[in-house]
Image 1 (cartoon, rainbow, N blue to C red):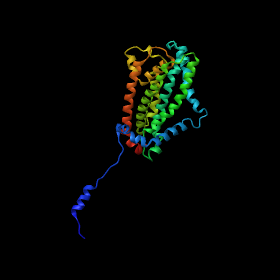
Image 2: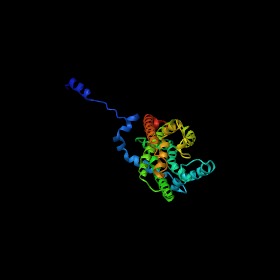
Image 3: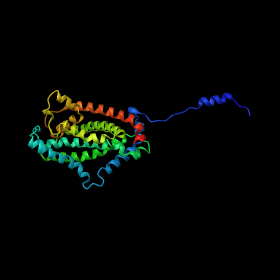
Image 4: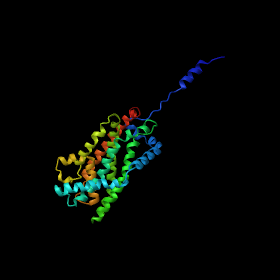
Length: 287
């Protein structure tokens, strides 16, 4: 049998090894094709989080209303009646409730989202999909609660005699700012929590400190420079002040604070996604 060495060499040259591997780091989130390819997984994760959010609870979705209302009552007693903290001419209970509605979404997102990857360990270790869908599903479920609480807030505001104004159209923008900050922080915390379970112990304390660093129990007008500028770096400061202006129409428009909070939210989103994309390669081995 006659052989042709040059044919063998041509076959070797034509043989190529192609390695398929997912994009790592921040690059993953600039590949919409991959996110779109696994869109059904994203929908299923979000639907799961919505279904299990209040499963086997006696009050169910009522917790979306009870949490901000109960905190509002406590704030009204201690900060409004006892401490006599200013509320910019608005009834204190309405002043605090308007700040607590977005804050409840944010704090719940941090508390539940930070543990989301660990709680989905069986899913992470079995199949591949963009892991960012896990903390994002927590935010989607939280948006349902936010919608319920917003309805309650608007009923209270209009029932108190406040007329609706075009500034209400700012609410979707403020929600987007809050979601961006929440996704950035929760994605980073959920990735850290996979390796260091200290997050679940440190986070409640950090959230409590963050609550008092946000103008919820007090107006931002009580804070003077340079502390006011430092306060604006807090992404929730602009969101809360923006909510009050949009819903209650009280005080001057806080555009500078909203702008500062927008920038800090985008920075947190970029850093959080970058760290999550870097760390997710080890999730299946550690979780």
